[in-house]
Image 1 (cartoon, rainbow, N blue to C red):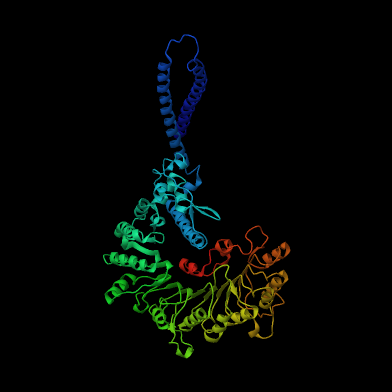
Image 2 (image 1 turned 180 degrees about the vertical axis):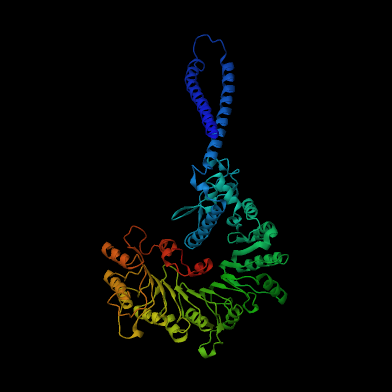
Length: 620
C-alpha cells in the first residue's frame, strides 16, 4: 500500500504542476496578443520605452522560452522512453533479449533471399540520400544518423514492388531496446559490400565483431586507370579481418582483373589461416581464361582454396588442369562457352573427379570442347554418392550444349540424384526435344531416381513429355512453367487408367505445380485426375500408389470457377489457384518470374539455403 500511495502522490503532484503549466501557457497566449498590439504597433502616441530596447528584452525572453521548450521536450522524451519500455503497457517488451535477437537474424535471412530474387530482374536504383538523421525527426536513441550518413544513399532501393529496406535497419529504428538488440547481434552485420561508403564499411566491420563475414567487391564500373588505387583502399580496410572471410564475391568487367584480385587475396591469406568456404567470381563483360604461371602459384592458390565448398564461376575459365578445388559440395558454372576458355572433356572430367563430395551441380550456358562422338570413348563414370541436385540452364540450346550436358550426365554415377531442373531464361523458350532424345539414349539410367523435376521455358511437345516422365517413374514433385506441350491432354494422361502397371504415368506424384501453361484449360480434367488418384475413390482400382496432396495452378487457361476451386480444396490438402484475370500479372510479364510465382515452386524436402538458390525456387 505504501508503494501505491507514493505513486498516487507523485501523480497528484505532477497533475497539479501540469495544470499550472497549461494555465500559464493560456495566459502567455493572451498576453502575447496584447504584446503585439502595444509594443510592435508603430503608433503616434508617446512610449515610455524605446522600441529597440523593448525588442532586446523580448528576444531575451523568447530565448528563455525556447530553453524551457527544449526542457519540456527532454522531459517528454524521457517519460515516453520509460513508457515504451514498460512490460505491462508494451507486451512485446516481455520477450527475452535472445528471442528478439533471433527475430532480427531470421529477418536478415529473409533479406538475403529477397535480394537474391530481385537481383536477377532489375538493377536497384538508389533514391534517397540522407546526410543526417533529421529526415527521421528527433530520434535521440539513433546515434547521430551514422547509418544513413555512412551508407550514402542506400537506405532505400526502388523496385517494381515498392521500397526495400534492409531488415536490421528497420528493426533498429523501432525503439531504443530494439536498436540495442540489433547492434549487439553481430551476425546481421556480416555482409561487407565495398560499393558502400568506406566509413559504413568500417562500421560494419566493427559491428560484425569476430563473426565470419561475406565480402562483396564489385569493380565492374571502375575505370582501369583507378582500379589499382581502389583495390589498395579496399584491402587496407579488409586486411585485419581477412582470416574471418567466409564468403567472397568478386565481379569485374574483364577476366584479367579477376586474376589481379585473386592474387591480392592470395597474398593476404598467405599471412593468415584461410577460412574461405564460398567463392563467386564473375567477369561481366570480357570472359576468358585465368592461367596460373607456375607450380608455386598453383600451390599458393590451392592452399587458400582448399576449404572452399561452394564455388560459382561466371564468364571465367580457371586453370582446369591444376585441381585447385578439392573439397567442393556445390558447383555452378555459367557463361563459359566455345573458345579458348572452354575446358576439354578430360579437363572437366578431372575437375569433377577432384571433388567426390559434390552435392549440387548447376550449368548455365556452359559447353565442353572436344566431346567424343561415341559413348564407348567416354571415360569411366565418376562416383558422386552425395550428388542430389542437377540443374541445366541455357538461353538457347544447341547441338554442342545438348552434347555437353549429356556428356556430363553420362560420366557421373549419382545413385542419390533426386532433383533435376531444366530451364532457359524468361522470354526465350528453348527446344529441349533433341536433348531429351539424347538423354533417353545415353543417360536414362542416371535420372531414373529423380523425385523433384522442374521444367521452365522449354519447348517440349506432349509425346516428348510423356517419354521424359517414363524415364523418371519416381517423381513425387513436378513443377512446369511455360511448357508448350503441358496442357489438358497431359492432365488427362496423368489420370489415365490402364490394366498394365507399366502404363501408369508418374504413379508416385504427390505435388503438381503448373504455372503459365495456356493449354491447361479444362477443370473437369483436373477433377478426374484428382478423383482417379485418390486411393479411397472407387475409380482408382489401386493403380496409383499416392494421391495429389498439393496442387498449384497459376495464370493458365482456366477461367475462375468457385465451385471447382471449392471441390479441389475439399479433396486436396493444399490448393493454390490464380487465373490470368485475377488483376495481378498477365502472361508475358517478366515480373512473374521475379517474385510472385516463385513461392509455389518450393521443394517440400529439407533443402539448404544454397541448394535452394541453385534450384531457383523460393520459400513457401
